[in-house]
Length: 304
Image: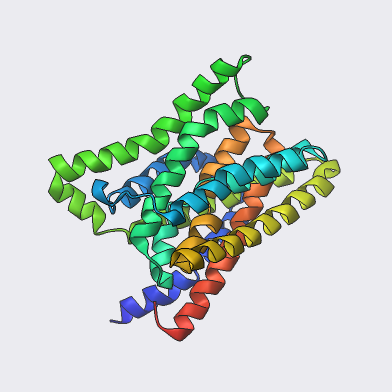
């Protein structure tokens, strides 16, 4: 009983602790950065094992959130690119990035609908897998090929397997290895702790990247941080408004506001101006500050 109480209390502060570890040990994070895609894969697999194929129904909530994610990100880029292309890319990736794989876990802890958000997490991630090659080839200036179609092929070869493979494996396990599937499904909380480890890596890499930039980039990085905060707050607010109309304000807020920043930073560094990755790196702090506050106030009402 004592262990359960301690775990509940630590869980509330897990996200700030992970971010602080990333800041303190950023000099050593580079040695384990290669595991980031594997962590993304593991989080997606655990989440997808929670959802049955018959439960994947795109409701009005999913359609509205997806519209904001895809159309909103393009609109933001088109508006801000007239002013500054790097800031436009940074804010774009903060909106375009799919829902965090740990979002269903946080949603459940806050009292929202886990199946609804797990379904949208699948829709959100698969939509990014399908559209990312075309969008990044059009707006990106990272490590892509000279021609548009070659760029699409290269990006698709990296992004699509990372997102589709866990879904396919989850369905195969369900039908061919049900015992293994049940074991994974029963350990949904692992997504939260894997996410915490991912945060350490993401924050550590972000801090190292920011510190390596010349002083002349500081004003632009501050702008990226500020705009990331605005984008974060607006997405939580808009998601809550949409969710309220569709019957689940918590799922709406977490679905649109809580982003897979591990994937976002990786995509920004790979396919956009590397400096644009400061925005999703800052988004890590913004969204997890909001999540930590939500969990704290929820825990005061009723122990999580």
